[in-house]
Length: 298
Image 1 (cartoon, helix red, strand yellow):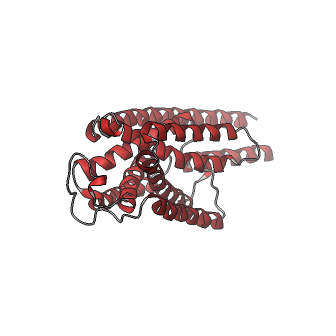
Image 2: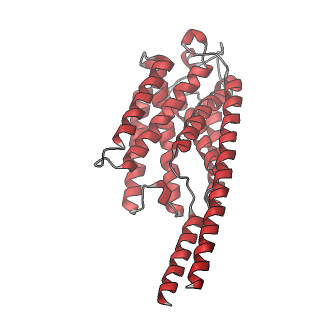
Image 3: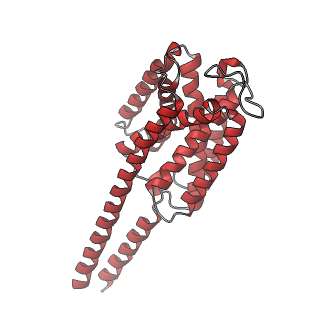
């Protein structure tokens, strides 16, 4: 009888954990969706700020409000939903794009596209430059992780099941995506590497992280956060490569067309993830039911 009661408790704990799971497993599909979302974030952010000429100031405010709305939906969700999760990732990528541009750029013609002479209402940039902007964002990211560490909560995203843990997670995501945009723009615009060169450099750094996963002394959690930051400049350089003029080393596909294609790809991937999640939930429920039948028989 005691054995049966212990197993029943384990079943309850397993069921509770399944219900409380709010974040996805980190797999190859996760990183493909992350790169797709961050690339779309780059092209969509530029679409609103530059192509539609809303400007960095108004676009940043609007996209940040969208981020808040999507985050509230994610936080109120009782379990992991791929559409909710990846919509927040996308909103942080779009907001991060214009937040980075607003911090680092100014209103000079250097940063205007399509022959525009001005953008929307309000200040169009603080003109801090990429090194200063990156230093500020790195400091903010370190501060988020320091607070996170002091709370004693886990950094492993698959084990984050509390409201506070998720808030800290999304705070780190927003800052890291903004930082990644600054890094990507620096590599594309100021380093001399160009879009393709910047993408190759970041891809090489990601390959190094992949090798380090086989080194036992290097924590996988640390590698995850490095990879999460680095996939953002990869998306930024890929987005610039798709949208910028041929004279600047891009394909000149335009922000609207590139964003539409990337959105279709991302929605397709989210739908696939949703189907897999439902199948996993059904399989888990069937396994628990079978275990319960076995224990009742015992």
